[in-house]
Length: 304
Image 1: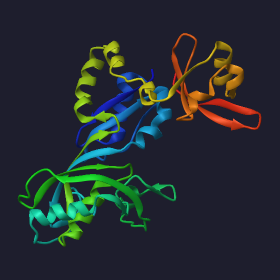
Image 2 (image 1 turned 180 degrees about the vertical axis):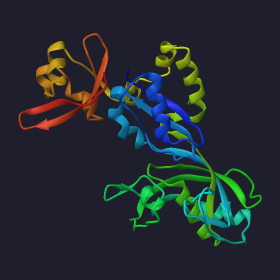
Image 3 (image 1 turned 135 degrees about the vertical axis):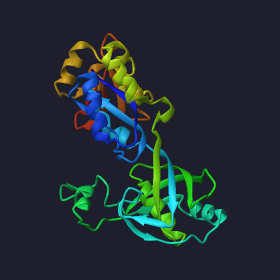
Image 4 (image 1 turned 90 degrees about the horizontal axis):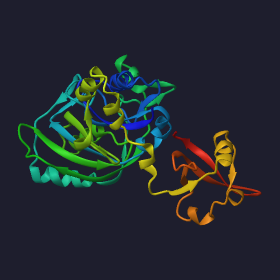
C-alpha cells in the first residue's frame, strides 16, 4: 500500500507515536513523516506509506504555516511553558511596538537551532543531549519568514501570531528572539502547524477517525484517505514507457530518450518527469541526465 496521509497530530503525542499508530492501522511496515512536531505542538503531519516514503525529502522541504501562542516575560530551557523557568520579567511595550518588532523578523533571518530539536550533533539528536543537561554550540542557519502577523490582542502577557515560513524555521526560537528584541524574553504556550505545502489542517484526518475505521476493518475507507504521490508532480511532464523500457528502468538502467522515442522538448522547463506504463499507470518520477552518448531518463523516485 502506497500513499500520503494528511494526519492531524494531537497535542501530547510524539510524531513517532503517530507513525506507529498509522503503521498499525494500515498494516504497512514502511511509514515515515515529513517534519517532526514535538509533543506540545499539534497540527498537520503528512505521513508517507510504502513507496511514498521515497519522496519524504520533498514534503519536508515544503514551506509551512503556524499559529503560535507567545507568553512574554518568561524564558524556559525548552522555549515553551513545559520547560524549566530560566528568567521572568515585566513587560514594557505596547501592541504597536510589538507589531513593529514582528515586522522586523520578516524576510531572510538567521536562527540558532534550539537544543530541544531533532538536529544531530555527532550522530546524537540535540534534545537527547539537552535532557542530560548537555548544551553544545550550534551554528546559525538562514531561514525565510514570508509573513508574521499578530492575530489576537496582547492580553495577560499573551498573544497569538500567524507565521508563514520556509523549512527549517523554529517557531520557538522565533518567539524567543522576538521576546529578546522587546527586552523581556518569551516562550510558547501553544503551537499549531496549520499547513505544510499542499496539506492543510482543515483537511487533515484525526487519529480517532482512523481508529474507528481500523476497528471496523474498513480497509477500503482507509485506502481512500491516501493521496497518490503522483499529485506532488502534476506540474511535471508525463512520459509513457513501453514494457521493454519499463523493465529496463526498474532494473536501474538509463533510458536514452532518442531510442525510447521520448521528445526532448518535454524537459524544457524541468528535468523531472512522471513515468507511466503502457496502461497509463503511474509508476515513478524520472530525471533527465546528460551522458557522453546522449540524454537519458533514470528513475529518481520509485512510487509503484
